[in-house]
Image 1 (cartoon, rainbow, N blue to C red):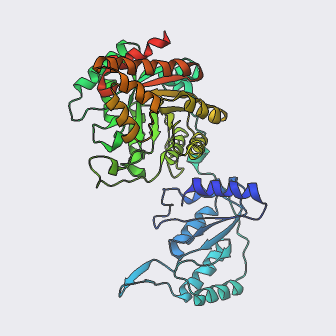
Image 2: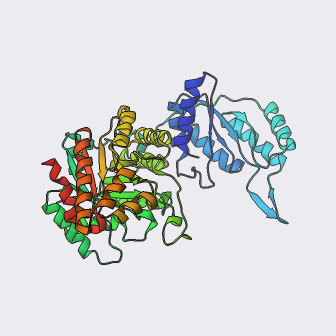
Image 3: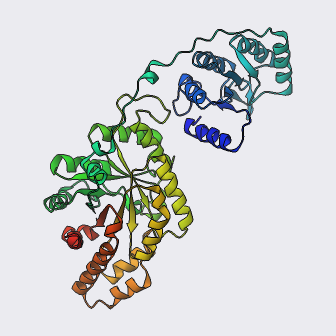
Amino acid sequence: SDLSEINQAIRAIKELCDLPIIAQMTIQTFGKTAFGTAPETFTTQLDSLGVDVIGINCNVGPQDSLDAIQIMSTVTERKLSIQPNAGLPREVDGRKMYMCSPEYMAKYAKRFIQSGVKFIGGCCGTTPEHIKLIANAVKASSPQRVAVSVSVPKEQAQKVEVVPVAERSNFARKIASGEFVTSVEIVPAKGCDAAKMLESVAELRDAGVDAVNIPDGPRAQSRMGALTTAILIQQKVGGIEPVVHYCCRDRNLLGMMSDLLGAAALGINNLLIITGDPPKMGPYPEATAVFDVDSIGLTNMVTSLNHGLDIGSNPIGKPTSFFIGVGVNPCAVDLDTEIRRFEWKVDAGAQFAVTQPIFDVEQFFTLLKRIEHCQIPIIVGIWPLVSYRNAEFLSNEVPGISVPPHILERMRKADGQEAARQEGLTIAREMLKEVKSLVKGVQVSAPFGRVPYALDVFSVLK
């Protein structure tokens, strides 16, 4: 039922061999796939991929399958196949029973042939007796040459103009033009009063920072929503763009699409797509983790929206203008897997990446070398430490962050609170100074919301 998935499967088969391909989709009783893709839409796309046979398989009975096939026959000249279930199952004495008789299935087999179907079978609930009578019906039928009048759905015929990256936001324009961008991460308010957070954002704007990054429930903590926070920033501060972190943990696909269409309507175009920390890591471990998709799948979805299509490849009219960012972790425990997933994110449509905070430049250089073929802008993450305890916490209790022993030792030796703060700033500046020529920007985390502390890191850019 996933058009993107079957698309990839077909491409993989064509790379490996030249065997004939029968591509079949599953529909629901309302006549579309589970993702809302109409038969004429997926048939047209499968036709364009050069498969040999296009068909319907499973999930619905003969009648719904026939309705779909008759639509499909109007948009392709490829051979058609059909394998319906023996109706929809019913609960009978604790057992699921399929109610279509072999005679009923055989009757529909004749109708399938009259509609131009070349391959007929059955799926769930069909028995040897069903197949026997279907075969007899096929043998007794005279194959008919169906006159096919191929038409392209009107909505599909309209060419969608994708918004150029440089026109999606000021943040995107600066990165596209090669400017070095600055951003600061500010966590949303714990409650419903965002006044203090908005004051911090105004301070960033006045200091000339390009963007403010807004985490989405980091470490599975409950805070004001990132999208709501971004709206407040646009309405009450202005002059600085939000980069909204959007995670897959809390919403199903429909909720995500609704959120993103709303964000697009409000002009919130900078996204950082992340999978999200599982609820068990936070104070509400019994909360449900949705994870319909991960960050790779969501990147695919947002890319489709930017091309004017929903998750079912149905037209949405005006395309969205999202500038799509993703995360990458230089200190991942399994760097090979991290890089492979990053490559998939880029293939899915990622246009920039933000790293986890770095404390080891050699690890960072290793990552850059191994992903240079991906050719998307990299924004380095920097976290100024404020104490030895802070460094220990980040290294041991925050996923994706690793503070090496020599950095921990430097923070341990700092004598007093102010000395520790200055040492943390010195380390952050050293990191940024060593890598700034290799990246397109920097994201500095404001520890405990201390904006002046984050701004101090930018001094090495002057």
